Image 1: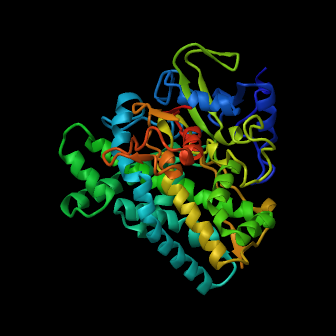
Image 2: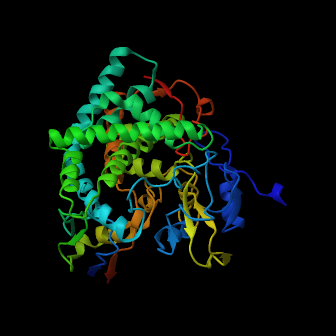
Image 3: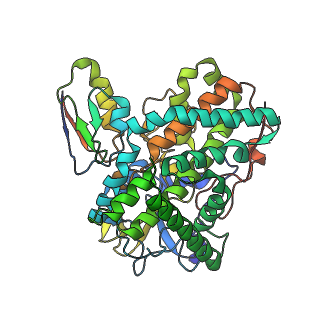
Length: 404
Length: 64
């Protein structure tokens, strides 16, 4: 019996092509059983309506620090979704999450992010200046995809971007599936928290015009809006989430456009297409990581399949984005598709990605800069040669060499 | 067209503002949705429909 349960995540033919199991499970099983790297068996959702339904339903809990909840990774703590909170952090869901989210959201409004666009543009231009000065080929991950989001989130939070290699190492370790040991995770967590705590002390002593200074003052007022432990967890969370996924997506978008060059040429011919191309690249991402878990708190059903209380479901947002019932001819890259922005790449429901406007601005700036300054941009290798970062829940590439 | 929003459901994504900034805005304090014009003129209807369709929590309701 157990041999029949496939291992998850599924293997991809290459970094840009989805696993064949996505379409198979979508067609045959609304709730497929798969085995996580931890060995635990979970239900997997790959259909658009099912995934969106689960993420928007408050009966399905984001809190996996529960007896019987499935674990994801090979570390004893079960991975990033089940790792115990430190101190009095109570913002995973419900009223606590709502309180935390309302505090953070005001820093990420559309108006505030648009006000950052010129500064992000300057950062992108400076990085491309360095690339051009150095000469081709360059590893785009090291030259731009990692430093740009790090510089942006550091400027926003008021953190020094010189520490980008440390953030990158800590983040990757905390996002392990199979790559790091529990001891390495514990070290990374301790170091990252100590770093954030130091930074907050400096903001307390010398407040600046940045998000972390503002949050430190709110936390110090002790009016119940943000505890000290939540402040540290928020600083770590924003530093991690603020660069890891965006960095990966810059590379994946670029690879999608350059591996089938007519896609890039279409934007060169019509630079006004940049925002639509970004949306379609977000939808088409086949390497978005392992997915998001929910713990089922009461007996229910998903598309006619009974799901028992106490079980864990994982949703694969990127498989849902290839659902032909939502996106006709889903494997075709089409920036003109009318519902292209209805993808689930940033989730859905009350936990929808807080930083998605910032991510969109960064991706638009990067693509616009490439189109304007590097019309001859090409991949040095083929898509089949690109190496994914194995064993990390966020996916991404090891490196990606480009010429122009 | 009449717009109503469920402020409790709103997750402050701002996707509505990005699509129809003459009809929607975000509150300074917490980023949650503000309807600037609950009965917008026809030239904004298409953008408002797009905003309702992408809302991550379905907080925007339209009566046409």
